[in-house]
Length: 180
Image (cartoon, rainbow, N blue to C red; front, side):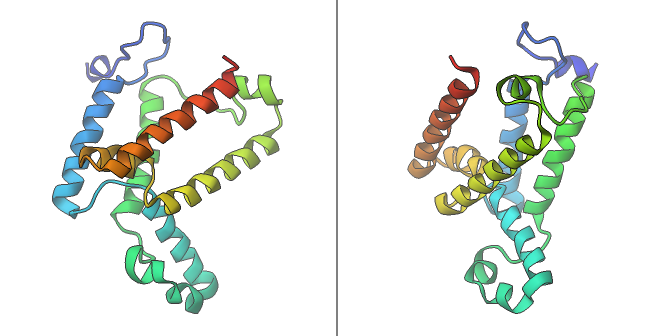
């Protein structure tokens, strides 16, 4: 019964994808709860900084502890932000499983058609893209979820500008990949 509630509104899709309206509403509720219980906006980039700090303390404790970022903004610990990332990964696996969209492949068909079926290139581009997004999130003072969900919810002008830029970048990337 609950799968019916999560059914996709898009008749073109053949899988059992979750409704974007329900998922968006749940993210909004999560954002409210985050403000209420943690007193902070919902965001993910701090978690990556915290995990980098944990790894940094293993490699070079003195240097890592001397950095201002880890003294004030993102102490190296497993906080709620890190748990949010873990929950997002678990949630995506549950969504794929309940929607019948799990697949075991390293290279999706569209990627193989455009760039070949080499796993190394796919992993290198994914890693480079993730690294650029992490650097961009630190420069912008937040990630897509921080600005796009929490900042927009608070009517932050800077977050709305960032959100518009996210969409412009996404559209440009989609046009390159799909050559429309």
